[in-house]
Amino acid sequence: MDMTGEERIAAPRDAVWRALNDVDILKTCIPRCHRLDWVSADTLAALIKVKLGPLSASFHVDIRLSNVAPGKSYTIAAEGKGGIAGFAKGAADVVLVDEGDETVLRYDAAAEIGGRLAQMGSRIIGASASKLAAQFFADFGAAAGGARTIPHEKDTAASLE
Image (tube, rainbow, N blue to C red; front, side):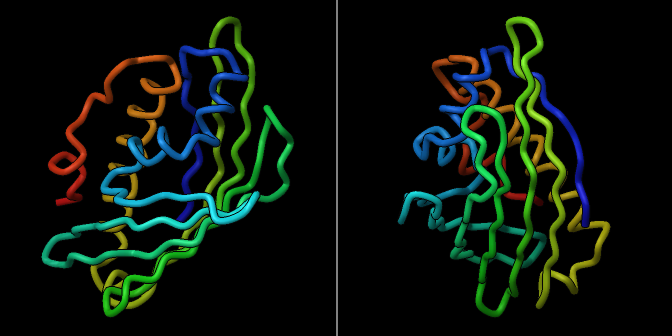
């Protein structure tokens, strides 16, 4: 599954870069993220709970940053294991571009899944991934742009049903 896109964020590039590296902001913006911690200078660990139709699972996710060009871009790779639910892994190249007083965040991502998740069907998975990405970017744009609150209630809006 491949996803490419861009998001316009009402904040300068340095503020967006800081937000992309702030675990408190990211934890708030990642739907159903229950834990996100730096474990080294380029590695994070997360616990994300998902519900896809009848399938619920907790994913322990290892996240690694590489090709870091501070303030401009990086590659983020993640691998999550959800026990019997299966696995998910992927990577994305993220680039920040100044456009006036705003920043355009461009991403090019690829992901793959296995186990029971893969049995759910590519249409359901693709629609759910698009829904999650839209939720993340809406919340991240609000947070990076200085909004005081995130526009969704994390425990109800991101169930992927």
